Structure formats: structure tokens, C-alpha cells
Image (cartoon, rainbow, N blue to C red; front, side, top):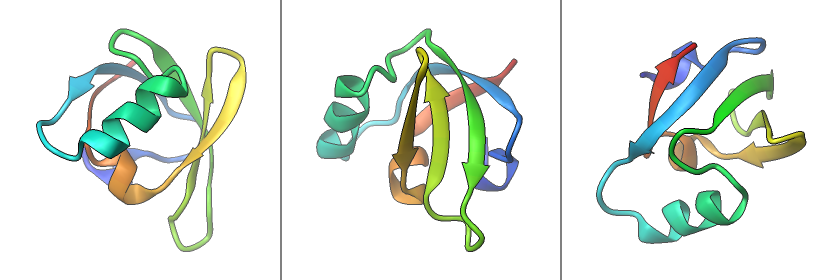
Length: 75
């Protein structure tokens, strides 16, 4: 997955997280972005940062450097 493929309207499944960046991983897990969850990219800011995701009925915004630690599969 590259950040360019996270475009508005695409659907993804979280497979896990890359090693390192424990703070970002903890934040995403606390927001409900857990392995196995599916989400939709709602919006991408004009400069590409942040990205708005619809996860479990909630909208959350993540920065590119947070999103790049997720291991994703397109649905």
C-alpha cells in the first residue's frame, strides 16, 4: 500500500502495523483502527494531509506519517 492509493471512496482492511512508531500505533488502536477492521477513506485534504477515515461509524483524521505504518489490503 502506498499513500497515493488512499483516495477518497476507497475501502481498506487493516492487516496489522509495521514495527516501530509505538506512539502512532497506540493512537490508532485507541481510535478503533485495530487489525481486521475495515474502513473507507472519506476525504483527502488538498495537499494530501490529513486523511479522513470512516471507521466503525466514526470519522477520524490521520496524518500521512500515521497512515504509513498501517499494513492494508484493499477491499
